[in-house]
Length: 131
Length: 429
Image 1 (cartoon, each protein chain N blue to C red):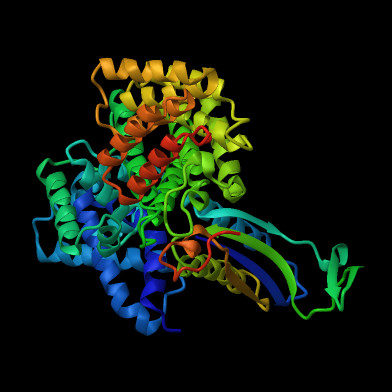
Image 2 (image 1 turned 135 degrees about the vertical axis):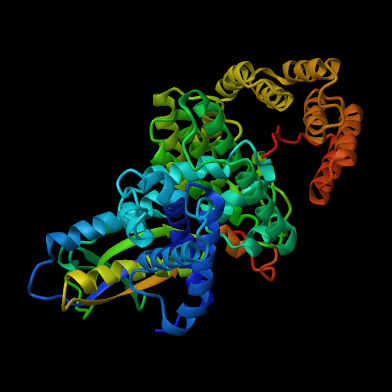
């Protein structure tokens, strides 16, 4: 089953991330890739260079960033694992590196399940399988 | 922060392979290493739910296993079996044996890469039965609990536990060392590892219509093992070939089962449901495999890729598929390959040509009573406008299959044959 992890920063210290942190993140990514569980991961540019398309009250609109949010989305990772707990554990490791190597940084990661064939299994109470 | 058992087991799945591999380098054999690792897991399962998962669980597990090893060392002066480490690895630089803990510490810093590879080869060692190879691979490298393996293979935890114990005893009795195979045995031994991974995949693939997702999850366990092996043996074409085959087959999982769990044949699958992520990874792995030379798995992956690239049965490159099956039949001849070649030839050159290959199989008295063969025959006969014979073939297929859902499908085809529906040409998924 796949999990999409969206990482959001809450507090970013004035000091830039250290080379040690970057190296540790790269090593962890390599670990997860070698273990066959990390399908894809990338950092995200600030919303200032993005856009937001919305539909409200029947009106479509597109507005350039930045979006006014207290938490900025800073990266995503797509894992293919046996359970939610596996994805949570890999995410723990990622955040732990921040705690160890970038004091003052605060953030949160949402671990979201991607719909998969297991969600449409015959036994799943007859929930529809066709989309 | 307290932890759930599921969270502890997740950590275990991540660490098991490397832990057992590193321990086995110390003990010199897989069974003792596995015992020590399981001891560490049991302690973790008691402590972590109460105290929380430690910040560095890998080090914690290793330290705990080492303590167990050292305890055993102190208890039984005769450590030759449990801790051959001191004897065979440290003899030269610490003649008096020294402190076993220090010796273990030194060894832990060495790279784990080759150890994982040794673990794969040892778990799939030829002294073990295939069933045991599968169980030991899933337990050590896959980090699955005995109860999970038992559920996936539709057997009891007791039976699976006994199978694993017997496998470990066999390795001990036969004095199988924890080492890489000699170069001249490497191709055969690698073949055994690939075979075990493919078997795990197929066990899951055969069960996609079942009602317990533990079995289909085996498909992804197999893919993960394949990816690990590909990172350990990046120069072996067939490793990438197998990974490509698994990814491409897995891409069809969302489409090969209907809403009520009934099988959907390739011809009728909604290709929009095929998993594009698996397809792109599969095609990339196939590319590497073909650059490195290929082999039977690579050829099968190349065939699967023909389907993955095609928008429908009609636009599928059946000539290429038929040609690939012909090559496959030369290097890995089997009646099933011939049957699949018959399907491809039938699609590429017409049902008469396909039927001729089936007749040839019948003359050689192979696959007689094989349900898929009768179903393919039924399809060809129908396309040739011979409804009565077609119906009879589908009925023989229905009678021969052991799978209820497949039987229903064949019986439907039998009826359609008699009604003379211009049913699409098909091929089993």
